[in-house]
Length: 340
Length: 287
Image (tube, rainbow over all chains, first blue to last red; front, side, top):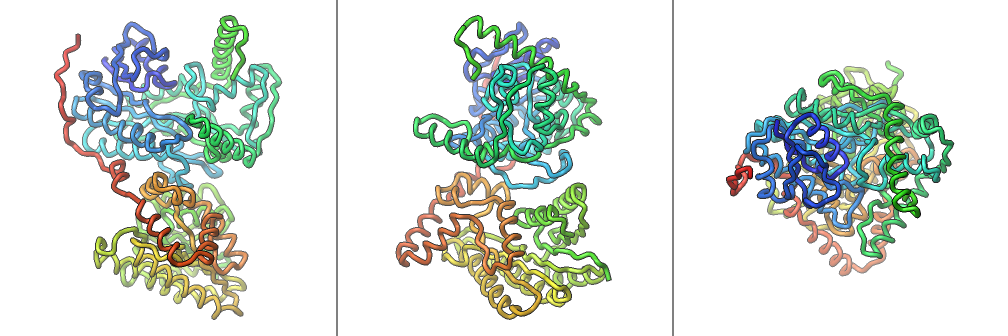
């Protein structure tokens, strides 16, 4: 089967494209830079240079594809040009949907974020629960608007399915600096880990292999216009670090960080980067987003798609193993290498 | 007579009303949620019931209809519910030139913001007076202090709410009913407005607040008996400036603020899906 994957130079898209190719599919990947080091390498993967914000570059890649996996997005906590989030995540998605509708694509899987559903109260949230707070960052809002479009195109006849990812971790390429992987890497490298204090806030952690599998299931069995949370288990930060200790066999140094301190750090980072003319990756608001519960249930995906969660311990073992290999490789190549 | 007491919130399915409902539920207060009948209202009620040990009564009602206030009161009394807090939140906002709004729209806006607030307060006052301590929170706006272009009718309706609340507070000074008025600045009430605020000018970006922040501050203010509740440091600073600055500078400032709200640029992100084929489909032959 011929499929198109956008965002293949990103964490999720990269792993998804490789899995699809390993399963024997002809995979088209649409990338901005065809010489990027992050392009997945496989004989069945064909690279198309293009950009989701430019319709004419999408069309050559999408022709004859049966399934489109649209994982491409601007994934950042903040940007000095907030309009970028909307141009890429909303208008880019509109282009993809429009191209898919008119080139006879059978299924369109859109990768979204649990940030669209927002924080949870005491209980875990499901797909149809209303948001409990307003949108506090451009990324989540842009993904919300994109989801709205995806649902509208379902009504126009395109078989769209939304795969909502929670906090993702596991082997793969590193694309941003506040990922769960980077927390695990710091921990196993024996560096100081900062943990939001109080430690009781609950988050949902999904293993990358499960997320990729969830995408395949969404394409195969997902109902038109529906949304599925592709999540994992819910843990408090305390439990997360406890499990990390048990699996890695390392004690680790965990420093509690209050919301105020995190906010100051965020502001400092933002100002520092602005002064140096760089794009800051966080600001005070973004940092304080980790101070709330984000518990979700993938019950709908389990029930309707036959989705299975890898036990957290197993997933963590695999992740630590791959991170260690990556670290040793870098250390042998660059003796001065330190984990950032 | 039931022992349980309830807080009645109008317009509680979206924006600030929804935030009030969540904030009250967090404080274990039983709720009567009044909003347009629709899935949003029932989904919110279900979520709150699942998370907190509170009683939630949903009354789906379009308060813009003539008889709706009377019907609402009849339904609440028929269920024999005790109300000790009333949050008059339902309202219609607008930012547009006077000539761009239809007479029907302004009639609806005045009806909801002015008439419904008055009627509901009048009808529920006897119920509130039965309790040792009761509260009325009316939702006004900072727009009742600043005479902003494009906010003519809205600002005037909120000025009514402001005067009404302050006067009623004096009247009920020695009674068991506490009246407060909330005057928030910009709030990210729904995604379209959030988008406008986020990509707007510097002042609106900095002063805009999320509904959950406003609801929490408002409820604290109400319970502490504050007369006028202005959430947000920057909004309070604007109020201070309002007292200090000469009139002509204020006029320049409000003019600049309203001019830079450019809704056209943002509308493109809210355009619904269309069926038009992508232009210039090249005939592509694989290698």
